[in-house]
Structures are given as structure tokens and as C-alpha cells.
Length: 289
Image 1 (cartoon, rainbow, N blue to C red):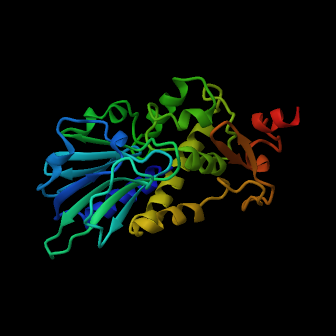
Image 2: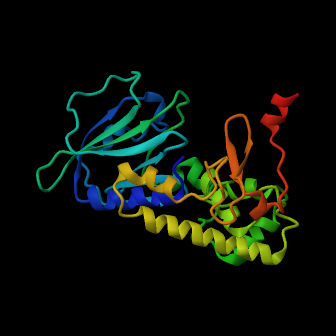
């Protein structure tokens, strides 16, 4: 799933490549992806692209006051196409394409952006609004993970009682951090994913905040400026524990472990984070019964 660093990089990519162009035809290939109907998608056509923005994990393109907002969910992505097909896609097909926006650039080129979604569970969402805060998911967002102060961060954690892993991926508490970067943040801070927000020592809260800032800032710096097609690979290359189950921890050499749930999993290092304790893996426990 694209998280704060990748979405920020995609926003910057749109600022560099789409701003100054005029929106041409908009092709909807997955009708279920479009969550708003007034104004219609066709209202974007003929408008100048004047900016791009990010709200948590939501990406937006400003078309002269009318915003195209998307949440890429787990399997979504944005692709820039220099020479797109001019044949409109058939809605409801098996293609991963959800939406295509054609452009006319001042140089006379006719590129496009494709919003695509891999997999069978289609959760990518598109909104056409004149105010980004009209998108329900944006209206519910907590403070941005790169803008929240340490004092605000502390108040957020002390205001809830749950596992720290669960809290920092809750978008209503803190916007932008997902499963992958939460693994990296907790590993950098040397904190167990199962630590409780209420009982986490004050010094560890400070270390967690510093780790969050460091991990996300580094990832943004590595991601911004990359071609959109290379961002996924850049994200994977910077991971120390996430998606590295069974591999050695680059800090201490211990084996990276995993806790699995029905549709997701997370990774951690026992030596760095849990004092050597192996956390209970519910899915594996059921298999062994």
C-alpha cells in the first residue's frame, strides 16, 4: 500500500509533470471506483492543472479549483503514460485500469495518467470535489505524521489504550503511516509492536516520535524525484524488517519474525524490539493445533 512517502512523491511528480497541462478526456474503466457524482468526472475536461496535494495517504490533483482526489488503497498505483491509447477502455473489463486522465501539454504532447489497481479486491477510490475536506476519509484524518509536534504526538498516544502498532496506523489518530513504515518506525525506536500506548515510558514516546520523523523524512527524500514507476522498488530497498521475514536483522543479525493475521502481517526483530521474546502468531498457532 502506498503510504506517506510514496504519496508525497507522487504529488511532487504531478507538480513536475502535470501542472501547466490542460485536462482532456477522462476515461472511467471501473465505475465502482468513482465515489462522487456531482460534479461529474467530465467536469474536469478543459481545466488547467494548477497543483497537486497530499492528505495522509490521499493524493489530489487541482484542476483550477476542482480536485481529483484518490486513495490508492492496497493495490492501487499511478502511472504516467507518454503515449496513451486513444481508444476509450471498456468499463467493467478485467484490466487493472480504473481511470485514465488525458492531457494536452503546452509543448503539444498528449500524455495521460492511469490509476490502476492490482488484485481482485477493488478498493481504489476516486472523488471529484471542489474542497478536499468534502472527502469523508480526509475529513476524519488526524494530524499529519510529518507535521504533528512531539507534544501533540504524546497527547494522541496517551489519549488511547491499545497496542502501539495499532495506534500509529489509525488514520483518525495520525495520518500517513501504514503497515510497512510502522514496522520500520517501531524497529528504529526499538519498541515492541505489542507495547501499550498508555504504559509506554515517556522517554520511549520521545524516541518513537524521533524515529517516526527520521524514517519518514528519509523515505520522502529517497522517493521524491523518482519516476513514479520506480517508487515501489525504492520503498522496498529501504526496509530493514518489513517484508523481510526469515532474513537477518541488519542491526543485530537476529532473524526477523512475523505476526500474521487474516489479510495482513507485520515484521519485527526480537532482539531489537522485544527482549528476545517471540510474539504469538495467531495464524501459525491455529495451523499447529
